Length: 488
Image (cartoon, rainbow, N blue to C red):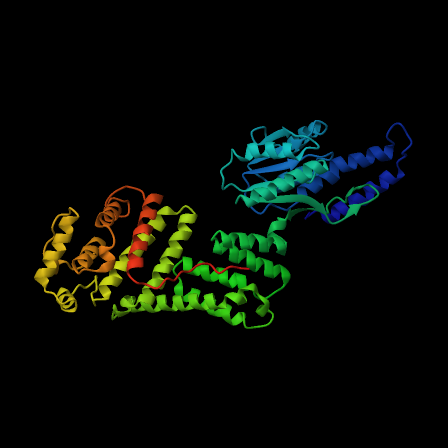
């Protein structure tokens, strides 16, 4: 908007009156035409620039402007956007106007750059602008102003900007619009210009939003999927989206918010009983949704029991509760591997491995945090001396140093739990090669998460998954999974 709008309206009326009285047939400009030009250059345009108060939405690292036959819109937008670097995209015909733009902006050659582009080939604009953008930081916000120039220049710059947003870049498109256009003079009425931001059609058209939401869902990006589903229904004026609720449930599961995820699945199941959501493709998957909801309930029961003031390890012996908890850890690890967060995935798989071993010991009433070896021997129908001999024997077979008396261990870690299970003749523990488990334990100890500086690798994550799968297959756990429900 323009704070000098009212004054400019008066001047515009005078300017238009002078032009109406000018003689169009004269070879030389008439006195009225000269006065009109002087009025525009000395009063109207300076007041237009001075009063133009619009600003861009961010501090942009660069702005790109297509230059047409009138430099005024470029000057207004460049001042309003106020980017660190300003690029003027001109043709051979409009190159001369760049000098005036640079002079009026007064920012110097270090800040303003000119790029000659094709007037009819959008690909040329793409290549030239891409070359400059690749020099910028990937997180730097960028502005584009296709107000001037040929149709090919305008379309090329706008399409490139919107495609850049698909790469995850902050790319905003602006243009100088107006509230009033003088048809007689074929130009905007001075003082009615304003800076308008063009929304990316892919961010506002429901069909596009749904497509991109499903795409994000399939990629495991449930946060982005939920956002896009919700924006789509807002555009359509609808109150609920089953797909958004489902995406939210998986988003919560991915961040270990098990109770909240369970509530979302319960909300979804309720919604699917109501018209018009009975027509949703998710209706045919209600059985799977209910199963996953019950799985989340099992996880909540297990975690509540293990974190209560009066800790109870009995639920840790429950096959179903442990199976669903392992499924949740597997879901979280898979998502992190898919997004390149290998370290987090490795930590989650170590936790899953340890949880399984804790489960096998809990079947014998043994708590690894508060070990009671006498009770363990009673359940296993052995004695402490025999258990100690068997435990040390298993360690020796794996070429590990003997440990002190078992009763002196206040807590039982991963490797100790594994060899204790082998000493007890546990089928699942015996089914896994001891050298593999020892190797995984050593890898953790030498990593940056423990006592060393080695970084987790994709190979380590895969090795953990293989060992865990063998454990689970021989541990007779039910086969459950938090596989994302198909949206079709």
